[in-house]
Length: 375
Image (cartoon, rainbow, N blue to C red):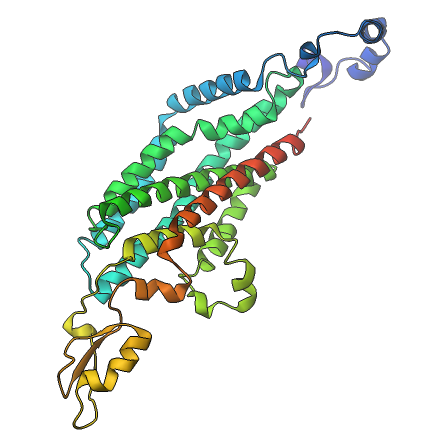
């Protein structure tokens, strides 16, 4: 049939376009007449049952059930899709934990804990570029079948996210196990219960990467366009989260809104405050700041007011020379200047979850109105 109508590079048969022949044919007129009769019959005999007038033959939850089941089967039949993500995340976590194996409580180890937690912000960028091609491919299928009214764009988007959740929770657990125990997390007051809270944050962070990747894909006409946004967005979020550039050093313009609207801010605040709260810092000999007090005074007499005001501790308060000052006494003194509070950790967790919900809502709206259908 395609050869007969001259599709592609095939020469057309006949002197007229087959579309024009169809529009001038009696068959076309008969089809149009039948459609008009169906419309008139529908207007003349309205359906009394409002349930039968809904745009879709089945309910939203039934559609969602079928879409999620179909997506799960598709993922199960494409093991490379999940195993590649699992490998990347596990390798990232294992490499990180082997680099910072069995951290202690020194100043250096404190900074290593912060750096290890900061690496969690790289997880979404690893996920986004992988998830976008599948979402856009599935969207093309949805657009192609949309006229049949098999399922709504809401079922499509929610189904895409729900089918990702079980696999990504397993990935989050694996990442958490390889990060927390080899690096000896949980030495602060929060203890092992705190590491459980950190698992929740890692799950939220991975789901945020999934939802953000789908959001960008829903707003983009193609995979090539979608992947162009990933580095820029990841860089902006990682830069203005208050760790790469400390909160006091941020320009007031960015600090007033971009820092507050950054999901990475909430991730790092919740993770750092949980890990460092009540963590007693013990400086090594090379980490002490050495100074001499005035003649006739002890280290405590000379520096106690300073230590009380700015934190830290004196290792030899009764000495009269070579006073040893450690910058931090507990981990709380490190993150307090960064606008982080242990009391706000659950608030930060729920705000991070709210970002996931926001991404899903925007993805639904974009899938409803941005089809990028090419005919």
